[in-house]
Image (cartoon, rainbow, N blue to C red):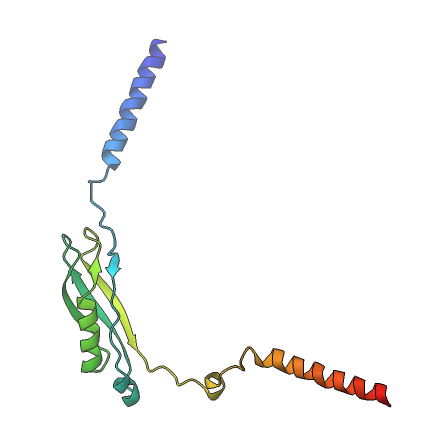
Length: 151
C-alpha cells in the first residue's frame, strides 16, 4: 500500500510539473471585426456611362471602444480617384461591434451593370390574356357546333 501511495504521489508531481512546463501565457484572443452598419459605396450612373470600373482594397481602422471607423485608406487603388473617394467615403461611415478587431481590409469592385437584353425588357403577356383566349376559343367552338346542327 505504501508503494502505491509513493507511486501515486510521484505520478501527480510529474504530471503537474509537465503541465507547468507546457503552459502558455494567457493571451487574450481578439475577435475579428464584426460590421453592424455597412452603407454601400455610391456608383453614379454617369460613371457607368463613362465606363469607369475598378477593383481595390480599403484598410479601415476601428476604435475598439466605440466601434467607429477612425481612418480609412486605399491599400490598393481602383485606378480612379473618383471611385477611390466613393469607397473611402462609404467605408468611413461603417460601424463595428465594439471590442472586436482594430483593423479590417475590405475589397471593393466597381463594375458597370450590363444593359438588359431586349428579351428581358419585353413584358410578359397580361395574366388575363390566356383566360380570354380560352373563352374566345370556346365561343368559336360553340358557334361551329351550332352551325353543324342546322344543316
